[in-house]
Length: 484
Image (cartoon, rainbow, N blue to C red; front, side):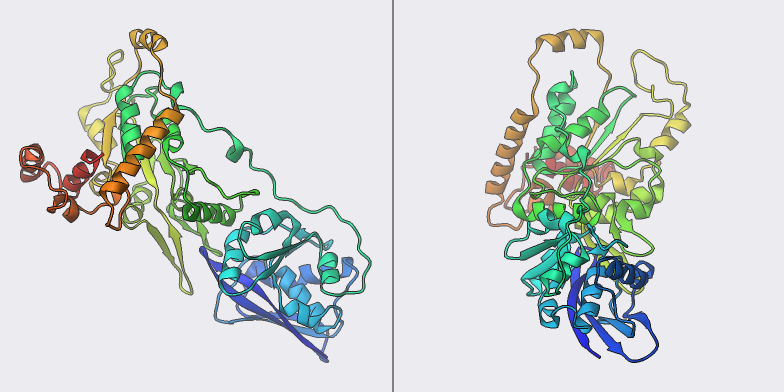
């Protein structure tokens, strides 16, 4: 009878914890018992491991196997423990070297034929293993590119459990198999839309550049066909490339969401545009089992676009208020707390009324005033108070269309250069402070001696504050936009 142990990684949010997988063989009735607080998907690992080992030519012992996942108090989710469980069992039966198995972190899901399936969250899992002092990780062949993005870690890619057993010293002849690969994400490879596609709306284009330069949130109101969605879709193209830390964070969130990362870290800001039927859990994250990031977390360091914002449930919109302030989403469960980054730019678009024609010069609105008020009142005042830039967008007329055809249009590459210059100027102005963007600067600093504007410049703001037209938070946000 034998005992062997190896390691795997349990993810709670983006944070990974090392799990010791122990396998013990005893002389009791045959069977496999899995202990250590597994969820339903992990509890089924015993059947996957037994079938995969048999079909790989290295069947498990007929004696009783007890597999312990330690620490037992840590919740463990998903099927990424299959490979570690299988190799710990084979190590206990001395079919592979127990010493070799114990020196490697194993992550991967087993198919019944013994092949290894790519596992979501591979990038944050390998980062956690490296941070916790392990330099060698065995992963499915479909995850090798992703795992190799972590520097200083030796990545061993195997296509099947048989290949993994051979690597650890099993006396088996190799049998080539077709590896299971991660499907390519065609949407991620598509070119970013260009600002030159937009005709007219010069004020809105300028507002998008100001928003990109300062990291400001935007609320656009206009009739259907005015170009609100086009403007929002082009905002990520105005943002600079991600720095290495943000790139690693965005790539980890993408991996945790089950989407392909590829052979390089993501360097362009993401765009998330959930439908207005989205739930609060889908927006901020959650799940009945493993806690997954929502749209707000996946939009971190990029843009979260809410089209037809008044159609979203009020609870969903108000759930964004705290992430807008703190830049972090914390999801609490009875046995775990998951933290996700949420430093995104919020862009909301809305029609001016239910029929969408209010204020349009060519069509009449059929909505009564009370209906118009109720429609936009679905977006709460506290949320609007966190929006830096609010603008109206109008439809293009035939005269503007003819004029635009004769006028050179601004392309995203040129606009992005202006944004980079503006951000460099802001970084120089904020040198010696913990902030780099205007949207990050707190109000007391803006109103303090280092950046205080003259009384003549703030006279209109002061009167609006006295009349109750804006709150103190709104006062500070006007100052932030003015600093661009």
